[in-house]
Length: 145
Image: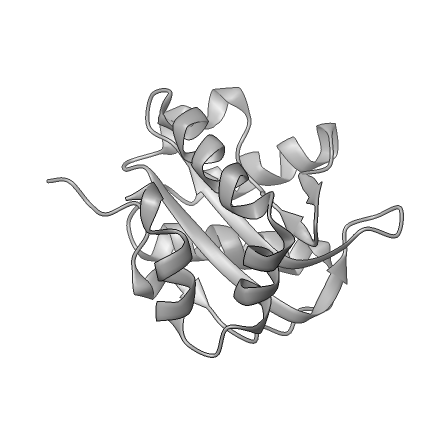
């Protein structure tokens, strides 16, 4: 059965987290909770973050698993965590939008490129950071489905 990559239930608005670890865990737990990945995928997200920051600029971080995390991915999917107050991703980089990605096979590259196009425009990022409803975010990211 095919699942949509992004659905309303994958979006958390107005999240409050203490730190980057909590933020990444939340992005991963959404993917686990909705059946996209196994629990072990979250550990691989932390491994990836330890290798190199997933902070991309424009207040956006895109936490995802390492190359060997694919075995824990059941379906390609993304989670969105909106953190209006921001969370420090190190070196003064503040993320207000986390987009957790899990890609089956090599689908993560396609998903990443579609997200990058949307997030390259600061206006789109600001809309998602200020969004009051999940639908506002879904409208901007409808390309990923």
